[in-house]
Length: 418
Image (cartoon, rainbow, N blue to C red; front, side, top):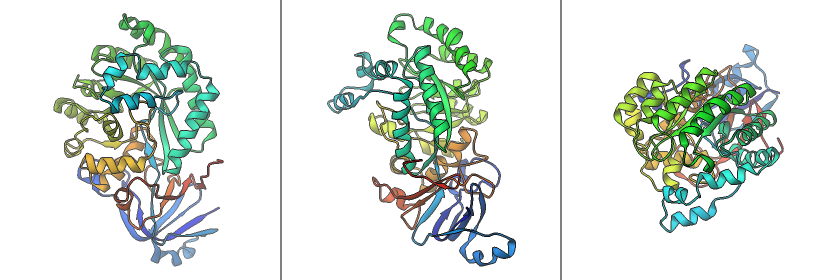
């Protein structure tokens, strides 16, 4: 079935002219067509002005369904390139503690934080993990997300990490969306290795990584290199081992302090370095030179009351910049990318156009899928979202609500029964 959406008040294509990402001043060029139209089946067939629609038949282009886009904005689906949506348990009690003044580190040191979710996740079945992740993914899709990266990292042992990756694999199979999976066995140190962390790094490299690679369940390997977590030396060993087994690498970097993790990401060929609240200029320069994507997570800074990443500096230096939700049960429990755009524009001083490009094409680029999604261009998958607002800036201006009226994934209307 071919669908034509016409009379679109604001058609935002984020056209890259074949480059597959945007950086610097080009982040502001999101190629808006006012009174636009788009024709698609599973792929995008044609994009242009509504005034050109009547001549399409002469070019052999036909359609079965017409959708009126009057007063609406149409954009590519969001690409959420950093999530932790497969887990078990609940940490609302920790949220209340933080409201009473406890810090992220204090909660972790008392046995909460990641360790709390580890205990719950280890005891959950694959089916339970899948169902929880599916619920969050469906809600994210309802808010405009059509592609995801999903991490493990809440088991910290081989059996549990494989369970999480198996749950992610089920989501890949049963959801008609792009999903990339990441092995994050180096999310924290498990309690049983608390006094000998280097032994856990050896276990990760000698036992877990070979088995994970053999399973074929992970597209990437990640590590949390930061103050109180993995050192640069430990992170380097893990990333280099992962690469030896043919895995691409990403990194949680410099969220709690500048430990040089951004430079480590650049030096080891990470496709992205994420968080970057305290990243140094030297690390940013290294990342720019290596082409490492800077993935910023404003929802996390908001949720744990930390300083925001310096998006203006990062963009103005010319780095490829993405934004994502970091959906997780402890430090950013939202799957709503519309809200993330609002935080990025208000609190990180990004323009509306920069935020949209960062949340679509650049997120796709960091996941290696910008050749098929992340922008609306003929030949790409028809991952298209219709918003009930007449201009794209309204998504951020009228914040805290869901503007989505319809989501197409590969040309099919998404509903909660998909």
